[in-house]
Length: 567
Figure 1 (cartoon, rainbow, N blue to C red):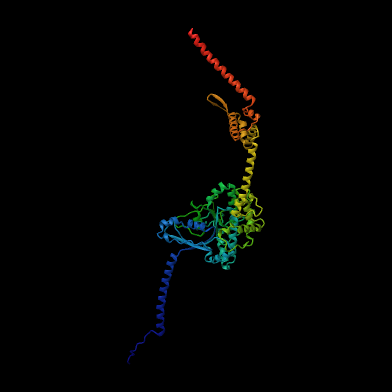
Figure 2 (tube, rainbow, N blue to C red):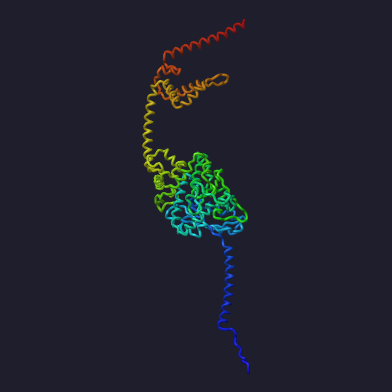
């Protein structure tokens, strides 16, 4: 039997297909491996992104804040691409810039911070802030409000406007954003309480044995916004100016600090005073609030409530007891409850004009001042803002009240008349004064011919005593002044009186025309006699006789001496 020589392949159609699938599967697995490796490298190089929403201040003060955080002076000496520093675009509405946070060695980049700026708390800008707050960005966002020590009496009103604007934005967010904000606030409230980590990344000391976080005290975290908040008071060097020009004392500075700490305690916010020319803990506070910590050098955040120009109050540190210790007599409970009434007030109070500038929005124009007066009238009962403005008063408002204006006491603008109209009125007054002086001079010159000279002397003395009463009292207290002149004791008052009489005679007699008869009593008053009078003639004859007799006796004596020598 012949054997079958045909050979059949053991591979079927299915087996061929399965082999091709295996090869494709291996390729797909290799592709996924490479993509995962590339994604891992890319994610390792991807920088953590943080956001800061900067509210308040001016364009220049916001730039100063940005420079203090980015350390531009140090970066220029290290970064080769210093000329490529990102610009600060904050001149209109919502501004933007960014910077990279470097490690202590200035080589490794820890995070990139996007800075969004807004200078005016107008309700129309709420729509610009809303897209910045999403479930992804809320855990990495910090809100900073700028205040300035040049106008500390406006702080509480400015702070209320910004917080009311933020509340209108946060309330309008989605439910997912609300849930995220609640989680963020819970983590912030428990940070540093009962173990865990502090804001600066250091380990917190356990307060309770079981490790349970302590509950907040009175007035703490009662009005949490949902996003961390930090208040920065810039230009602390102007405290000296207030102390020198406005007579501020430690009491005024302590009152400002107590109000700010009490209000910010309700929001779980932090507070810091900064000076442009001095180093501060501002970068450490801001970066720690965003969860950015150096990998090489730990920078602990220390509180400071003693140095008045270097105040640092971290979150979860303050309490009512610490606020009361600063200065006695401060009603912290009343201020805290009044702030709740301020936040329950409807916002906005008045719709400002859209074409107003930053200065007008701050109340520097006439319309802005009247609007501010209306806002003060609309403040709720027990308002902390009104209580603060009564305790920390605006010195310009005090000056206007002292001026006693009948209209608005806060009106800064003064209406003036035309220059030519003003000069015309002054010219009429000057002509009237000139005419009156000419008439007075003519009357004085006409009466001086018949006025006794002794009376003139008495009038001059009366005038001196009227014009200089203080000098007369001093001379009376000192007594007569005498001095030695060539061995002779001279009375200064008597000499001055004689000089006055002599000057009066020189002024009056030359004005007399020739042939004018002068009264004998005036001559006697000044020690003179009238020419041609009997007393004058008798005196002249007597003097002539005395001179002749003396000459005759002198020559007679000479003759007698000569005759004596001849014998």
